[in-house]
Amino acid sequence: MKKIFVTGAAGFLGFSTAKRLLESGHQVVAIDNLNPYYSVKLKEARLAILKQYSACQFERVDLMEKKKIEEIFGWFKPECVIHFAAQAGVRYSLRNPYSYVESNVSGMVPILESCRKYGVYHFLLASSSSVYGMNRQIPFKVSDPADHPVSIYAATKKAAELIAHAYSHLFSIPVSCMRFFTVYGPWGRPDMAYYKFAQSIFLNKSIDVYGEGKLKRDYTYVDDVVEAIIRLMDRAPQRQREFQIDGMDPSVSTAPFRIHNIGNRHPAEVIDLVKLIEKYMGKKATIHYLPIPPGDVELTYADTSTLEKEIGYAPTTSLEEGICRFVEWFLKEGYLF
Image 1 (cartoon, rainbow, N blue to C red):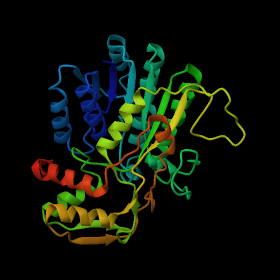
Image 2 (image 1 turned 180 degrees about the horizontal axis):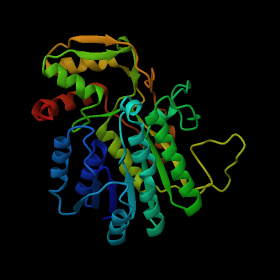
Image 3 (image 1 turned 90 degrees about the horizontal axis):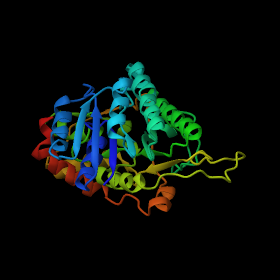
Image 4 (image 1 turned 180 degrees about the vertical axis):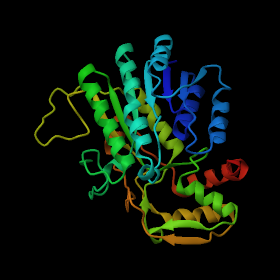
């Protein structure tokens, strides 16, 4: 049994990971500020499930409440921290940049400061495939540069990775940055396309599809992502003494720091996603096609070779199987949120 500190535990991935940890017998302190970016009712429903476990303690706290966070670290003394808490959403970041800088950049520092003070064994950071921005190398490799973000959200995620590296270098905190590729599944986020499509089809409303449905995403099922996180948790990076600055790979370092892609490795067009939702809901969608909005990219595609080498695992759930499971959950209770 380990003592795990999970931030953003009322969010999609935070909840899914915390639940798996609790099922495996670990002790979890879960924090979240329950911000209203999307349905608080959904977040509370997730937390209600976590609170059924005696080994879970939930604290409602904002990342910027530095004193409260340090107090929690002081009495809990976590061995591992999995940091999901962040302001999500690419398009929303164009309208509300301040909330992204505060949550995704400034808000990470109190967590890292507490990790430094209390000697945490491993800090795992939830990052995003969005950091690849204008990268044209296909598939996206962790060795590719990620210096040209095309959204405020992506820029803050890249900034978070850089700050985490600095802490890793200065204070020998083992850090794993996990770049997630379009995670979906039961208990997901209502602001994401697949969930919005399901809601609109269910309510007989039209759906907005960008770029004629030709945009491709590396849709990755939530259970596969959680499995990768759990395996990485016990694989704290070590310093790489022979690291060379010339021609360096940005995913490794002399610091105990590594970057991993967590994706399905099988990009699919958005229109194919729509067709699968139609199939399992038994209803046709009314589609309203729109131009590609600012901040969006045409394709995401994960190379997971370093992840496979590190943990002997890569996501395996097909998009059809994953959407089938999501729609089953949605028709049972997801439509309520």
